[in-house]
Length: 170
Image (cartoon, rainbow, N blue to C red):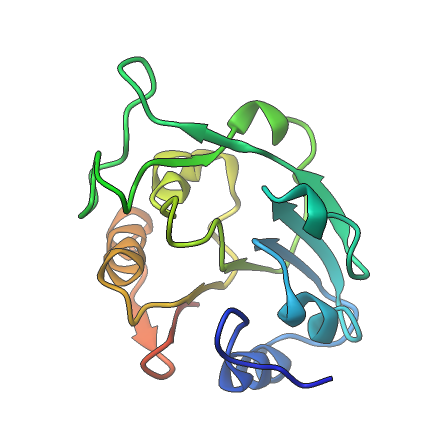
């Protein structure tokens, strides 16, 4: 089973992770899929997932977190698409409390899917350890690319492009 690209991370992203992270390290990923299958052969995985049908699909410690939609009380982050069809919600933080591992060696942002928006990562960045490498998938889309840029500004570390689909902050 290969199936890199499309809905999954690119093979170049997988190879980059293999290059910068030693076997046995821990990855916290937002969104799961075929990439989880491949990465779990080398790393301990924690996967935040909003689709119940993907929970426990691969060898990962799944954290089910349904989407919480933005409304008057819970505002969208300041990203392109704010209050549009590209930033409509994010993982419900209530479901993440006490479930994100205390220690991990890399964050992979590949969820929630683009129909919800990923700007909630910036909105809730304080619940994540941003001293580890952060990889952003789907930066060929404007919102995901801007998320990487804004996270870079917020944490004071430069971002780089691996290719047209993947960016990172080390």
